[in-house]
Image (cartoon, rainbow, N blue to C red):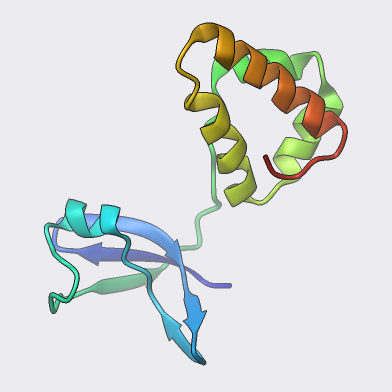
Length: 119
């Protein structure tokens, strides 16, 4: 699936091409509409270019430390699709307390070690 850079005014974002109803489409989420200063239904001028850069996901230091004790879990995390890695990170980042975050990191490492792909 092709990955693109989409620019609307001064705002740009990375996205895959979506296929719907037999047509290829470029998604424009509510978050990206807001950031670009446009509304649903607006006619907009869009610049599109191919995104050949690899997808990278920043791993927080506390998860890196937990992975240091669990090579299998880290390898399985690195082998996941970017969307699945982001899902695991979102699960950790949404913790409201440090204790909850620590439990979620432990659970993430354990579940990845067991081969679970998504949270």
